Amino acid sequence: MRAGGAVQAAIDATAGVGAQMMELARRLYPLNRSLTGDGVRETLRILEETLPLERIEVPSGTTVYDWTVPPEWNLRDAWIADSSGRKLVELAASNLHVVGHSIPVEARMRGAELLEHLHWLPESPMWIPARTSYYDPAWGFCVTGEQRESIDPEADYDVVIDSTLDESGSLTYGELVIPGELEHEVLLSTYVCHPSLANDNLSGIVVLAALGRALREIELRFTYRLLFAPSTIGALAWLSANEGGLDRIRHGLIVSCVGDRGALTYKRSRRSDTEVDRAAAHVVERRPGGSVRPFVPWGGDERQFCSPGFDLPTGSLTRTPHGQYPEYHTSADDLSLIGAAELADSLGVLAEILDVLEGNVVVERTEPRGEPQLGRRGLYEAIGAGLPRDIEESRQALLWVLNAADGETSLLDVAERASLPFAVVEDTALLLEEAGLIREHER
Ligand code: ZN
Image 1 (spheres, rainbow, N blue to C red):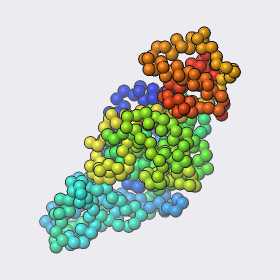
Image 2 (tube, helix red, strand yellow):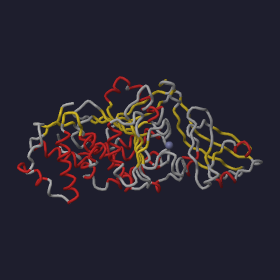
Image 3 (tube, rainbow, N blue to C red):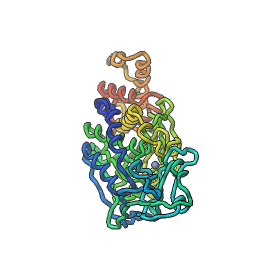
Image 4 (tube, protein in one colour):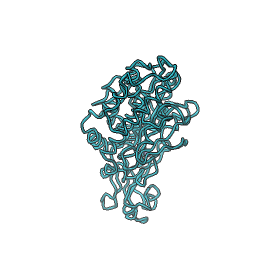
């Protein structure tokens, strides 16, 4: 066994990690990301300043399972102007103003026709909705209620969307493998296809990037694979390219919506009780307000990773889940919705989950008959330095680990059964190993 808590320690050693993540989110916020295009590439390029990502380009037209990679979309400019030339809506004000993957338009049209291409939120007229049309050739603008009201059905408007849909383009994703002692992998993924939206997207990107930097600093048992890919088809493109190696993936976590002020939420994998499900539940349930939810086949890329042909042990960590906060997929999901403290808290929880996975070994007694005499080995003194509650937990852990060390029971089994924090069980197991009473059982 090695000392536990290494991932958490690596993060704790990064001074101001929450502020660093906010700073990165601020840099990434103005980029116009979409399913394809230069916004994703620029996002990955910025991440590459601190993480040596491998960038993969999947050509437009490539078939991945039941899907086809669409033409690459880039947007130079867009606006709606009235007949006097006054711009009523312009891209420069918000990336969200243009429906993602809109086909190019340059036309003068009646307000009545233009209104058919406008999206707005009658219940939240101050906010601009976020909309996409990746697989249907369409165009549209997303506007505030006030902008929508300003369109006169009888008047004429100049409408420009200066976009390109390039059949010879590609979809881009980034990947990083951080090798550990084992070939077995932990897959950590987030999507990179949302334009200026902070919690739903940037929070996942910046937390995963910070985690990747920490993981590169330490000795690891598992090999870690970080994936920054556009959602759905990006995940499918990765699955398609890596089908031969999927049996190496022992644990997976999808990270998104981790910067808002809501409590932590873990959504189980399709298999529901895999080791990562148990590790995440153990950690999240101990957090104030933390909740663990059953698998449902909607949400993020668990729809792909947990589809029956793959059924990977992949859960999802969020704070408030997708679609369950009012600002979701609107311009109100801006940088004010996320905070350095919340990002740091989410990163800490991820680290704690990974520390459980890293440290979850099976132990066995060197002499399993009867209870060893602990007093003469100085073990009670060794755990007597902490707070009274911690001492009590450690004393319980001592007896639990000794009793559970049968060559079949893991340290997480012990923590669950004894309702003790994993770290206490792990620290106690290390003491017992040092005292020669238990050893790691090779699984
Ligand atoms: Zn989203």
